[in-house]
Image (cartoon, rainbow, N blue to C red; front, side):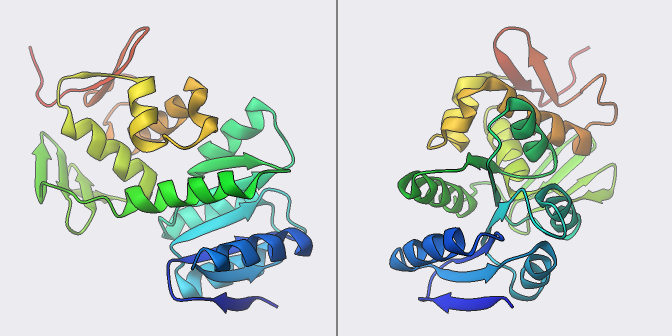
Length: 237
């Protein structure tokens, strides 16, 4: 059965079938002032996510009923909670798979809790980052920053928090070339995972799939070979 504990603060859901790891993470997070929800299988984790709407989810890749990839995909259909994936696998392909299914970050077991804590704080900090503009329109793309609603060609598009922050970053630097290193430092500066440029590329590709009319010929986020990306505020003939 899931359980709820902790002090008043941001709510974090930990989903892992290893009770020792869950209790260790729970104890440390409570010391940091978080409210902690615990679940030991995928279905319980999904129920907790839907019922309590946590601020962040720590999700194990290998669960006894629903694997973490499937659970992450189910969560992403309805919610934009930040998700940190935990796994014993350290291959690049596993990392990319985790990111492509909707995870915001990825940690390999065994891990140092101080690093996990730093990543949680970094994610929650950027989620709360203030937005200067209230509304933005570029061709078929419309963004209401206050309500975090995005529409493309009049149809609402659902972005994860990471995708929204990435889009906001691009819009803040219209028609300027942003290197992968700059993007990483602005959004994931505390995560060693994003030393690999491929991880940034995965998030950009996910964002493109949701806002570009033709992903093969992007109009908004264009690749600058050997450097990074540029957000095209206007179409230049």
